[in-house]
Every structure is written in structure tokens, then in C-alpha cells.
Length: 384
Image (cartoon, rainbow, N blue to C red; front, side, top):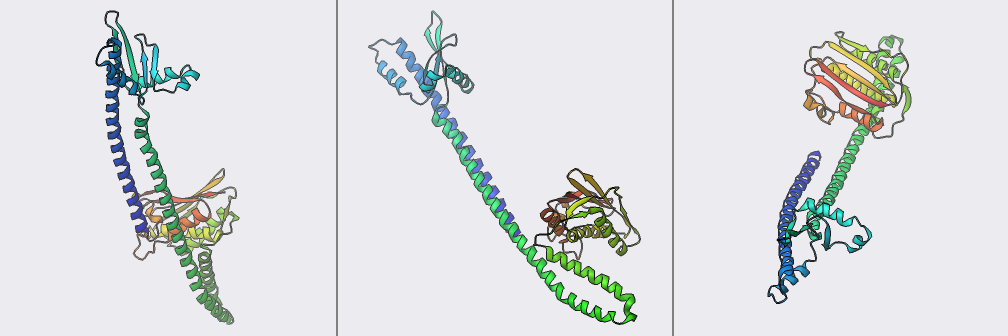
């Protein structure tokens, strides 16, 4: 399903890029042709206007010149004298001309930026001439800019489609996660009940006391794991928790189960640091990080350190190991379901850890840094 979603998204991106490229090419080509035609029309209009100035009433070209001049009702024009004073205008908003004394000056400044002017000689001896400045017609402006509006609409549409696909995909993943977790908790529940019953029978014989206590610890541990699975998908109950104690508890738990060649360090914090947590789920995250840190030590020896920083409104927890490290290309992949570098790994631990921190605690978890042969640091960011 994820591959289908990814393939669909790539197809939409490719289609969007193709449509945009073709549209921009077509619009630029069409607007360039229209602009050339309008420039020719202005040149013809200037020539016709010049004919009106110099022709006699009996000139055969006079009627044609009048028709050309009067038929221009689309291209905006401004005429100035040799000193740059505005003497006439065509195809501009007459209401604004009357209402705003600076309107023509602003339009003239825009026309000067758009096109070079045509020069129309009035009197060669007196060196009198007019300059004709012109701007883009309304049609040309529409051709240039309207397709971009369409592209914006298409972009919004594609964005909505992608958002819908992403939401659907995430909802499906959530259903799979919740179903898997609930079923696992259910499957664990039945044998745990039986084991608990057998353990109670063993307790009736005092000779069993040396190993019954250890069995009870393991049973409690299995109950905790089942409880964690049952909480996936439900709204967790966050409670104010002393974070340092949770860290000390999990490090102590993992220290007893790790090789003596692995040294654990917890940086002490002077004052208790409180945060809103779901202790069972938060312990699960720490356990996953510490287990991964142990697995990263291929030689079976090294150091694992946990450091906490308190900031206004949030706190940071860094879990560092001296293991083999993670390639930078895999910094995000390690949180994807199914990704694992272990031969028998399921690739679910860090994915669950991210869901617990980001979905339930509204925090962040990521690979802060890693270097081959020197170790990795995972960072947890939590609201206080």
C-alpha cells in the first residue's frame, strides 16, 4: 500500500511538472507573438497619425489613416511632446484620469518600463516631435497571467489530493498498528493468566521460594509488556512524572541484563524534572533505545550514557552509545516500520518509539548524530 501511495504521489508530481512546463512554454510563446503583433499595430497607428498631420484633405490615404487611428481601441497609448509633457492618451480609464491627476504619470512610468517609445516627427525644421508610449493590452495581460492562476488552482487541487492520500494512508497505518497491538495484548493475556495460576500453586510450597520470586519478576515484566501493547491505539493517560526516576529505573533494569563489559552512565540532575508522561509507554521508548544501543556494540563492550537537559517549556534527553554507528542515509529510515539491520529484527521498535513520543506525547525523537565506529546519539524532545 505504501508503495502504491508513493507511486501515486510521484505520478502526480510528474504530471504537475509536465503540465506547468507545457503551460509556461505555451503562454510565453503566445504572449510573445501577441506582443509582436501589438508592436506592429502601434507602429501602424503612429504612421497613420503622422499621415493625418501631413496629408491634405484630398489625399487618397487620408481615409485609411483615419480608419487605422480610430480602430485602435485595445492598446493603451500616451503621447508626449519633445519635453516629455503628456499631451494626449488613448484607451485608458477616463474616469481615473479625471479623478486622479497623477494617474497618467504613473501609467507613463509603467509604459516606459514595458516598451521603447515610437517617435513621430511633427516639424523637421522646428525639431518638433511627439513620443508615443504604449503598454500591454488587457488581452495580452490576461494571456500572460491567467494561466498562472489556473496553475495555482491546479497546485491547490493536487495539494488537497496529496493531503487526502496522506491522511488515508496514515489512517490505514494507524488501524494496522492498533489491530496488531491489541491482538498481541490479547494473545499474551491468556497464557499470562495460566502462568500466574501455576505460580500461585508453586508459592504453596516453601521449597520453591528461591526461584518463585524471580518467576514473579518475569511475570510482572510480561504483564507490563502486555499492558504497553494494550495502550497502543487508546488515548494514553498522561501524568506528571519525575523523568529522572524513570530514566534511573530503566537504566538499572537494562544494566542487570547487559554484559559487565558495558558501562552505563546517567548524568545526575540536581533538581527533580517533571513532565507529563505515560510512564509505561515512556519506559518502552527508553528500553528500545537502550536495547538498540546494546545491539550496536558488536564487540560486546562499550559505554551507554543518558543525559538530560532542562529548558523553559521543554526538556531534552540524549541516549548515546559507543557502538558501530548509523549511516547518515539511514537516520530517517531507522524509524520506518520493517527497517532493521539485525538478522532477526522486526524493525518495529524505533517505529513504535516515534509513535509514542510524537503521537501520544507530542514530542520529537530523532538521530541527533552518528559516526561509524564511534557511536550514535538519539535525542528525545518533550514538552514539560
